[in-house]
Image 1 (cartoon, rainbow, N blue to C red):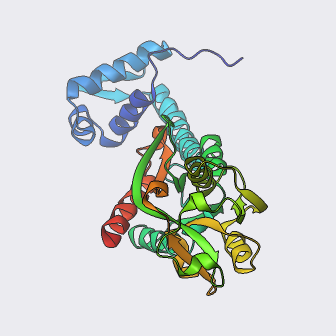
Image 2 (cartoon, one colour):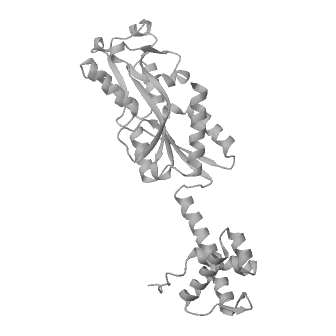
Length: 304
């Protein structure tokens, strides 16, 4: 166990000691620190109390450091430098104000939203390095809480009181069918009339899969799912290959296979996804996350 250090000795008082040693007198040290000369004198006197030895001698009206004060000052420089470096390293390991930011994202946001946000963030903080981690909503939520990512572009995390979330945009859900399907020519799809249709879907944990289940709950039947997949691009290709129909968010339209059609659902089945940028509330003052938030606000304004 390390020897106990007297509570009179603090980092702040060591900083005052160094300022006094460099300035040469109480008044200049006080001006440098933005405090009163009385506060400087009180701090120096308390260091003598804490070390239980004399550090200064009085020459006229001026304090002069003795050899013990110079020895303590040498140690103080090392201690403050080591602690400053330790705090910086600790913050970097936790992702605070580091030169990198780890952003989690849904697969479906990588065609437009993610590139736009990364470019916008680079304009605000050119020195920052961005690491992209893809996953389902559940994956991203778990990684946020485990500290594996700093922020997540994801569906709104219902009931997550430990997260701060800012809305990016809302997205409509569509019925997706092959171009040769009878549904492709319809103005809107009655999901309740699709009980005999084959479907493909994402696996559990994806925000789009949650909407998929909710839509069929409203339709009153359990869909026949021919195949499940773990990413939305594979899902679109399964529809293109005629394996089955599905429900997709409108944001995938720019990367949709040419032989897949998105058809609106009838009003009783319509739903919207809220896409947000989310991060832990305990990180709300992190400079990198503040820069990301500002970038997201700019993106939201551009697409409004």
